[in-house]
Length: 154
Image (cartoon, rainbow, N blue to C red; front, side, top):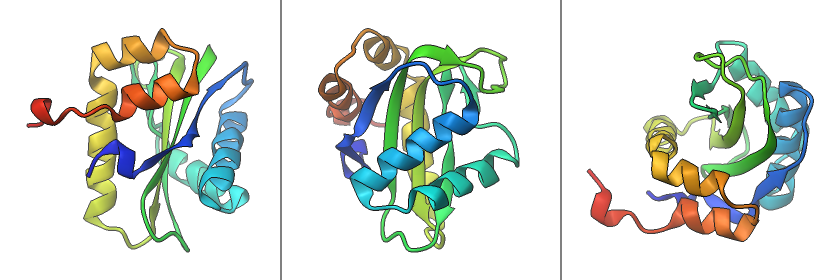
């Protein structure tokens, strides 16, 4: 599994100022609807339900909101780089500017965890995050996220 199997170029965006986590989730839901045909309201509800269990802001300006949904046949992702960091309730209390939303079929089991681990490993890479923060073009962000890292695989 690699990020190019989860993420479509049309699901990568640079987003202006968002005023709340709820608005961020709505943006992710809208993009997931456009890129993958998901029902936006269900995607938002899934993200909010998961977030109610504990914040998915993992620190260093990164959030990994995720949800399991009915009706999905594969794992899909949405990546946003925010122009202005947003208070997300992250563990380190830092606002987030890099957000990778992940949606998995409700019965995906271990595959959801593998995808989440892949996204987490990618987003922990400080060089990748620096490149993401330095670029404003969605196509460039997609290329940074999906470039072949096979030589770095553990």
